[in-house]
Image 1 (spheres, rainbow, N blue to C red):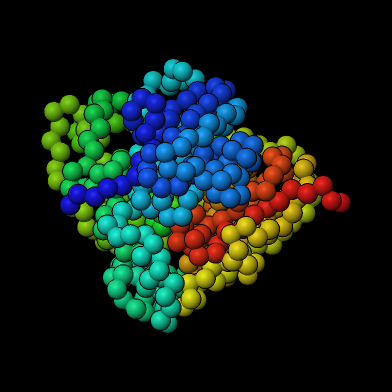
Image 2: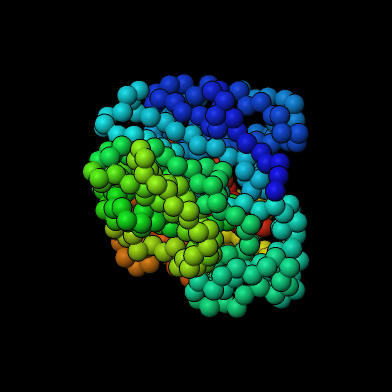
Length: 432
């Protein structure tokens, strides 16, 4: 079934941009999509006026016009770019943004970028209107515990059972724009090493990375190195990134790598295959995956350490809403540009996020990185991130340094939650 979607085509005619650390980020965004748009450089920390949030950092770029961006690129790693205009991200207006530390790989290994999406043939505005129409529940909800997705036309939605996993039923899940009916087959060497740079660009779907018969090392999250963690299954919330290093068996073969949305039976994937290895057909449907949780987040440890400075103060951020009216909020506010709290340059600020709702929220702070320092009541020496998942009724505490002045977006990266109020700002002030 043919469909028109958006895209972000880079200078070499491929999706996205691949640059070197320290190179000047010099880019002209040309809007040829037929409507106003604006792109956020997710993972970067530019001056606030170049951050790409409509009417907060800059006006949208009108159709047929362009805008020139120029700032120093200081963040290496696996990042991405996406529209922050309405629900264009759901229409696939997103692409990888890879920043390499060296022109030649430090390790003798192959690299491959995998971008994940949830896809619907429906107009996202129609889906949002259905979700916000009330009627005693959330249209399209599925209940927790892996009970599968309900149809959009359902007026009520699923029963609350320890949290709800999905707002939206999707027609397909994509890995590099392909379903498992025709997955991407990546040619690899027998006994070779490959680094997968995986980006969850889904609008509303947390996922599991399932390496199947292989075991790998998770070496970075959100572009920041962690002490390697071995395993065959790793969580990846909306907007998070994961770098995984794999060693292929010496005997060769084909090895599916699957991506499993929580609570959904459908799945996406790629296949790593050595020369001449048969590639079997993979089923698009499987058992519904469990909810993405923080069990691994508890044991991530960042390689880079923050300077040893005390926390200046702690702010409480309540994640609220989610009733029949589908209004979400931060500290009870649902204004897209409401100031949640203010900071002063040079402060070290802890933010304790308490999720008072029955859905998980992948929380993203623009313009900064933060360190995960507590989950529930347990203090940890966690990862450096720009997105952290806060499950239902859970508390997650992060710490960031106020070193990039401006008024910055802080929001849930679930597109429909953000569009329905779960977005505010953090503003720098000179006041004592």
